[in-house]
Length: 374
Ligand SMILES: Cc1cc2nc3c(=O)[nH]c(=O)nc-3n(C[C@H](O)[C@H](O)[C@H](O)COP(=O)(O)OP(=O)(O)OC[C@H]3O[C@@H](n4cnc5c(N)ncnc54)[C@H](O)[C@@H]3O)c2cc1C
Image 1: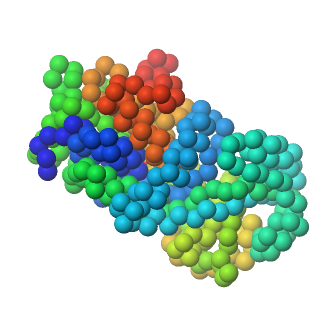
Image 2: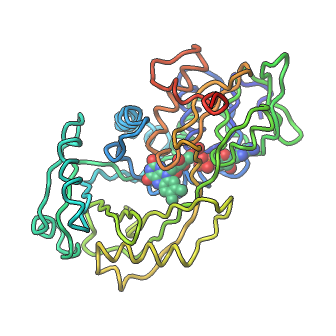
Image 3: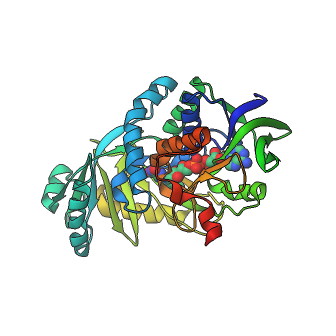
């Protein structure tokens, strides 16, 4: 372990690894402290969907820019790391499972079709069934979006971390237990019984970011939101689409990934704390939602059932920027259900801020100070 790095990043999920990659690419010396293993939490168990078209909130422009950055970076990080991120470029269909959804979904065709880089069109039920006869015949049409990206989020996180390593970043196993300050300026991080001195610290602790409140004397209002995914035996021939719809009171993605399994994703459970035990209730609910869209799945055996936690803020937007009142401390978290998509743009924004003190990316509204101001 180095005794000094320009920057110490706490957390080796997709966010910490993406920031490390960017900083190392720009010549900073970086240590990433990870108490578990790289991508062992949400970053390794996410669905792995990169689709910037399905959200119109405050992060919309970041989502799109990050999607473009992924397209530029995916080959690079896979080559530099030797890790295959199992990237699939596939069509997405947003299904109308109820007739009442038709007007809103038809309006989506114009919105998504107007986004740079995307084509969208309305499909009648017979056109959908012609594309994929195994989709339920009880549908009312859908929006076809060409093309979204599906990948393996664990492999992407590992690829990003290992590519950062090839560019000089160091991954340090251990638990960060505090920040060392001199005159309100961060000068190091405690890791177990050791210390790494540094000029800047980045907090990328995901759902555990609240822990950092103790190191900052400022509340970091992040809570874990549980999400479960069920994988069942795949179809033969494979399903070549990502389908999504609202049913049984919630949404569901159905996609066959390169591991051969069909993934049914995901539940959204608040108030469960740090519980990551897969639940029977979630399995039943996801199975019902999946079978509503692809009835053939009824006979498919379970392959794997996982649970992990999204880091979420009270307003649903991420926290990105410098920590107020503490020089040399930065925070990047609260990416909710979009952290895999947002990795590259968060990496660049944080590297800009740390190395130059500013960024041209629109992250000013995502500062931690917005919570103390309100
Ligand atoms: C079910 C589910 C499906 C999802 N699907 C998608 C998707 O399809 N597309 C998408 O874009 N996003 C998706 N997401 C969201 C995405 O997974 C998260 O936003 C993202 O992984 C968060 O990354 P992170 O690095 O902030 O957190 P994490 O992956 O949780 O990493 C934080 C790391 O910090 C470490 N850590 C914490 N405290 C300390 C400490 N004191 N010292 C050292 N290390 C510490 C932890 O061990 C952990 O490895 C999904 C999330 C869930 C739950």
